[in-house]
Image 1 (spheres, one colour):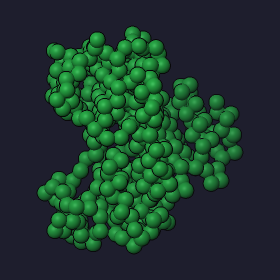
Image 2 (spheres, helix red, strand yellow; image 1 turned 90 degrees about the horizontal axis):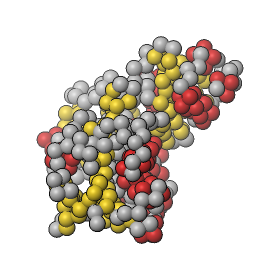
Image 3 (cartoon, helix red, strand yellow; image 1 turned 180 degrees about the vertical axis):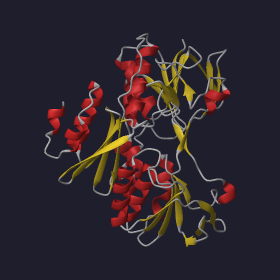
Image 4 (spheres, helix red, strand yellow; image 1 turned 90 degrees about the vertical axis):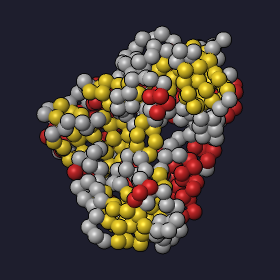
Length: 399
């Protein structure tokens, strides 16, 4: 008898199938992934794993034995080539698998440079999959020259690892400043200064014309007319939702795979969760590219596949580790019109407001600021900005 099939064996897919069993679903479950390894954590890839501080086994979200013990069929290294909505089947190689309900947790893919400007040269890497990190690991030798293209969190994390390993790092960002889409100028200024103290050259408002080299990258032509020698390059210019399979199947696409408040796509038998799925939040259709959303949305979809009928409301949080800095973010800063800076000793946090409404906090080595900010957001409370800015204010009193 057809059961539930989940396409995409990442954080969301693993969370979804585990939740189905946890909620007592007794039917067949098949989890299909196109990578040859069990579902694993992605955030440590560009941090501890790249630094050599985490073994591959510690990356895995659950052991392969977990799936067997919970009667979950795990198909690895098995790209799905088609979804037949009328027949309610998916095709994997020569195999056709029937489903009663289908969940798409197909994640996202890194944007890469066009081949016309050197994106296909050897030594040019994206940062998304375990295989990406394994492929570039040998490049991280002291004294080598790395070009990082893109000043978002992925690019900055890769730059931090390289600097710690003794490489000469140049980071270019075509926009006027780093973190332009995701953080306030105050946070960007703090992060820029941190990287510069560690020897990273950051060049903002500067585009890439082309990577140069015969077969392997050896240099970069920049938009200001300069040329720099390069031993390898890492591209961190954003990601695109994994929507191709859904689009080919005729599902509605809108900034990813369009879902309703419960996680259902335009086909009532097909659901989506994680980076690939868009949903309405505070009146706007968004996608959340975070571990928190991958887990929480997948678990909500699992419950709704079994009839819970509950609206998914995220409580967004993110983090980034760079050098000895732990940056923790709670909330979404979209639409902010001012930033309140709080400094208390070595701890620093930036609090985002729209009018008097508290939206988000960036906490830099400030776990207390992060936790209090997160709890305030969950409670729907907006603390007095003057009290937040005053280092004499005991943060817990804001609750």
